[in-house]
Length: 320
Image (cartoon, rainbow, N blue to C red):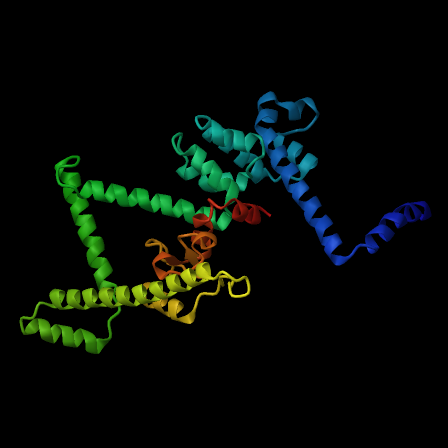
């Protein structure tokens, strides 16, 4: 017992001399290495199962083999074996699984939307996006597919007459449900009903109001855009280093109010109902160096991550 303590003492003493930053750096380094090794181990399991290597080495099952050698759960073993079969016609995703390049948990999230045509795109997204953003991406793809199918069924003459008719009724029903879901104050309802009773076209009245709102928003946005562009031009024209100011990433309160007036407080992706937490530059700020509201979009955290998948630096930050 004394010998063990003496042997361990130098290592403990070495760790005690580390700063907090150094200790955290080591923890992070070893943790990343462990996660990478675990992914690679799980990627080997389909071949281990195929060869019955676990039985040759004295294990009662593939589950015991995975648990004792790497602490992998039965659920993850089943997932790895199932995904390997599902990706049989998707070599890019199969390689991502068996090589350990992407975790089984991420691959399981995208498996439902993966095809032989989009497998490269899906693999790239699974590599760079966090799990929450992947789930959002999957919902978006499924929603786009459902919308396309509804539109196809709604086209008269597309498919058999009964299907086309059902498609039209489905679209009409969803539109009616959406209108009925509008939350209007009681006094507004009463006034609209009264105007309609007088023979006034309520739809035209509301359309005029919406057109006027769009026009006012466009004018406000144009003024703010011109102001931002003038600031950028002045910075470019400054010849003296002392006079040349560095572009600020701070978005002014006026622009934030304009965006909130136009988009509300939800993510601007039509199918998303999450709160907008980040204002995304659709033109990269590093290139434009201004906050032109025509190129700003309030997004939720997940859609912001998806929007930035083309930025290699951003990808690396998400993977840490």
